[in-house]
Length: 184
Image 1 (cartoon, rainbow, N blue to C red):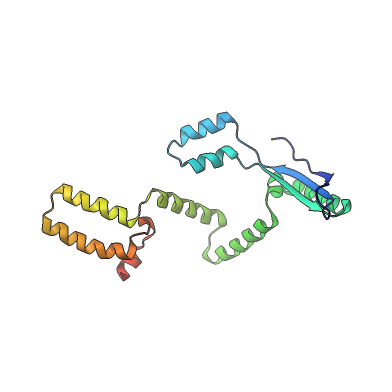
Image 2 (cartoon, rainbow, N blue to C red):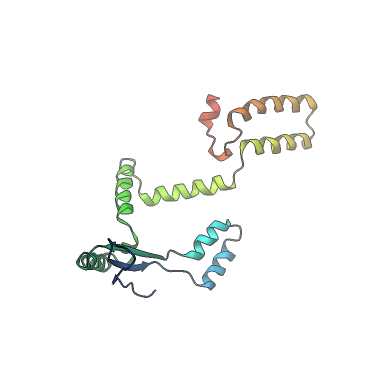
């Protein structure tokens, strides 16, 4: 990855913002890396593939009324770059504040942001593979019919699942908890 350069340039497209500071962060993976990723993740959703292929490259611009303000900002960003590296430039201040708040919220429970993100990613993987309750009921009923259950048994199953479907039909199966089922 080439070194990040911060440039202060005149900006002629605005009456109030006469100068702009531009820089870029992150990188894009090579075509070879994208092909390798696809081979390792053949069943990954298309949006995950597009996200990987785009990389984490971003162009940043900040506008200023005077050249002095723009230069002070650029100098501050250069200091941030030398202190924190490229990742320091990529993190907006709002994200830093959010990370601090989230870390404080997790502290009483003894968890870190990394652990919370890991747990959430596992949750997303499970819910992506899951189906809705309505679809599961159709599949379950078909399996019982194919198994050879008697008509009376099938009618009983259909009756019970009908009321269950009214309560949970549109929900993803992975998101229905045992406590909710107990309450139902």
